[in-house]
Amino acid sequence: MNKKIMLVDMDAFFVSCEVAARPKLRGKPVGVCTGPQRGGVVASVSYEARKYGVKAGMPTFKVRDLCPGITLIPADAIKYAYISDSIMEYLKNKFEKVEIFSVDEAFIDVTNVKDPIEVGMEVKDHIKKTFHTPLTIGIGPSRVIAKMACEVSKPDGLLEIKESELLDKLGHLEVYEIPGIGERSGEALRSMGIRTVQDLWEVDEGLLTRKFGIRGKWFKDLAMGKDTGFFTLLENGAPLKSIGHSETFPRDIIDEEEIKNYTLYLCEKVGRRLRKHKVMGYGISVYIRYYDFTGNGISRKFAKPLFTTSEIYNSALFLLNQIREIKPVRLIGVSVFALAPVKIQLSIFNDDCKEVRLERTLDKINDTYGDFTVRRARLAGMQSIHHAIPPRGIPR
Ligand code: DCP
Ligand code: CA
Image 1 (spheres, rainbow, N blue to C red):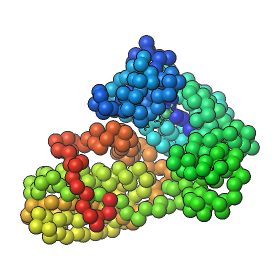
Image 2: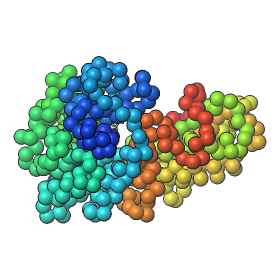
Image 3: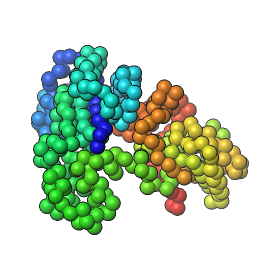
Image 4: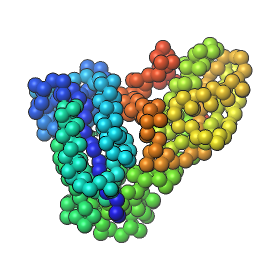
């Protein structure tokens, strides 16, 4: 491995954005919560609150039980998107190859940077001074090592781990702490007596693949610091064949504008999943069913792939208009197929592609706060169809 990758990850990001504007809360237990005042969950938790056992995803009533002195602040998605965008913009201006990984994480290729530690310190200083938000930087020969270096030095850390130091510095990590393995697989590994990174190094690969299939090999590779599975799905081709979404509407619809709105809603759902899996599609199918249970569908392939919601929507609407009969509609389905991975180098994240970048930020916020927290203008007036019953036989 002769690459050098730096991961910039903001500490307790949503909380830090709030504390930046309320310095009195610095050093105190703070959480940012979503949903209603009662019955919501915390999305982000300060490190002081974590000492009480408070974790992201916990219901607020439980959080108050564990840490009665905690200050809970309602989430302000637009603020976080704005700060995230400004930080990413700074990183993109400073470095040549920046890959925005999530709302508060970016991988940077620093292979050709002379002194990555010094540059890492500059980045930390600049972000802290400009945005008043703390962060941690991990550096390593692969993304997964950079990520683990970051995890073990949080908060406010900066750590480089070289390939030869891997076992020394990370051998003790629990398997579920390896990015890409997760709690459930971690539990399954532990039940086989495989508890740490070092155990994964030592275990026979055949044993893992017999139990977990291809993912077993990924687990071992990740523990050995190789970017695989979770980290290279994009480079090696995604296993998904199509991504689709359809809804049975709460009532039959005939109004042209309403049909367009629902179509956009479905395309947004499909687009979010495409972007989440970092794939684009060269084909699209649209299916329509009417109040009388008749229906039809149409598919097309294109030379240029679909990735943004507006690209999917424009194609879906074009096809829908070719097949639609003028009678009340009960269901519409949109599915994108002929999928190909979006390269992780993410040439798409350059200035020409603000729309793609914006969509990813919106996706993250919507994933966090529920569908369409941040809505497109056309969707703003639309009623929710979350309760709609999913139809059978349509790919989801
Ligand atoms: N987030 C969320 N729900 C989750 C995980 C994350 O809403 N289950 C949001 C809130 C976080 C932000 O995304 O502030 C970034 O996620 P991280 O997992 O990076 O968590 P933090 O930045 O809060 O903490 P850490 O310091 O551990 O990175
Ligand atoms: Ca973070």
